[in-house]
Length: 316
Image (cartoon, rainbow, N blue to C red):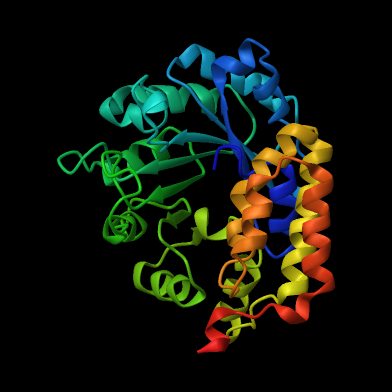
């Protein structure tokens, strides 16, 4: 969720029902060097709570120092990213790269737990590859050194995001009699029905949602409503989608500045307006323009002429 789960995105997710959120992952080395991009990611706001700050790195001492810096910003949780599969991270031994060295993973976690009074949680994967799915052992050992919750993505690092997430081992971790900390499942939850099915089948304490919420912050309330009532909420209409995109854009520009705020919004527009028939012309304007005024005009036009837009399935 790099360059996605920033404060503007999180504000909309919170507004629409997210219970607990994490920042983008932050480089421990970047924090120590006082790199502007890393430091900016420490921005958290009272309305976001409970909020966790997520860090990654390969050096234990650097991770401890970064933890001390983070603690001064007063988050509710410090989360360690042992799950990022991206080459530039994993091949340096950070993120999912540490899954090739479980003893170091345990030492690093223990060092971080001991260096802070805040709760420490972990996000990880099943293992490095098909032959090293050690997550059951890893969960026990990390619990033993003091983590207070674990989130598990149902793929190995080698799989990246390909194929279907396998929740079987996530369920085995949750149902291990030795495990008493909360276990959260992650991977491929893209509908309220699937959230309920996986919650019941694997017994997890909660579900971590990533890609399904990009450009669709309503996902959280839809899942919660379905879990509570068994009924599906109507999807947001054109007006709600445009207003959310507008709100997101304005917050993004305020927080990042016009140039970066406009550029990083582009990944959200496709999902904000997914499923709308004959929308290609307007989608292209939104994702190709770097002119803030032009984008505002396009969104305003869509809002003013919402009656001319319809969901594709309604035309069948």
